[in-house]
Length: 399
Image 1 (tube, rainbow, N blue to C red):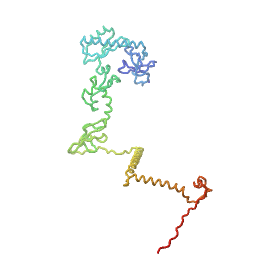
Image 2 (image 1 turned 90 degrees about the horizontal axis):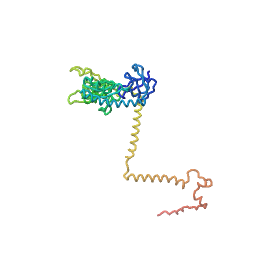
Image 3 (image 1 turned 60 degrees about the vertical axis):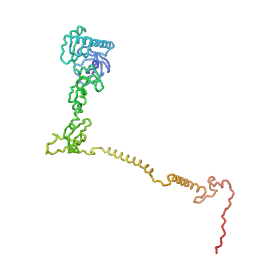
Image 4 (image 1 turned 180 degrees about the vertical axis):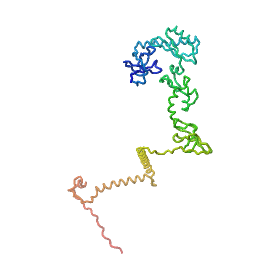
């Protein structure tokens, strides 16, 4: 493992590894690094970290120091010089009448070299232009021709998706993009819809290419002759992301179209057989319940079914009570009668307790507690009168 620091120049382009050389650098710090062209001002995107030795391309150059205030002041002066250099170079290009588009200018940190980036459709003879620029800036002049994709990477912008350009945000290198990538993703082959602001095919077409290639291997192609549970037919439409196909079934009369999952159809190799040849049977029946289903899932489903049945039973009980038949007199009289019967039943034990003696052997007044004696004995001890019913005399029998 090798300890390195990841930096970017002008906060764009490729990430480079440098040896920290004993310096502790944090992400976001500005540093001065040693390059093949001398000292350069760069920005750290990842602090001290370790990478495998095979990822390091020797020789790895060191980080000279973390940028100081004077270094930052020099970097600001260089930015002003770059803006002035763009205006002067644009004027010189117009004077010489060259077919080139100036994109950017870059001054070295030490100020001994100025580099101009431009785009052009063909080769440009800029030898006279270099001489005029060298006489103005009194330093080394370099003119570098770049492509339109590099131009978009330097200038930046907003893509048709509404987000900043991928090349300006995080792409380090440009990967080749072909029309086949758009075709396999079922995208429109209109150049205006699949091209970026640079005029080349969008870099994002490459992001999902591997996923679509894997899906194509498991889904029948458009126009393939397939076997379905309802018979044979030809595929008329394919949805790779949903893994579904629309099949036109063979038969007489009106055309019948059905949509199946890719697992429910089988493509016939070689296409439709010739007339008279038997149709092969390649579709394997799929069981409704797989044998590998865990027993816990079945138990959970049965428990869920029982709970649902119990809930439905509880819901039906109050409904049955509400629909019980009522008498002709109405429910109010029945409820009043029930109240009277309940009141009479409550009074019966009270009367038996106050007026009647229990069936067992009665206790004498002396043995009873005072609070259990009759109220008449508590109020007065006077003897009671013997009220006896007088018997009627017998009547003589008539005639």
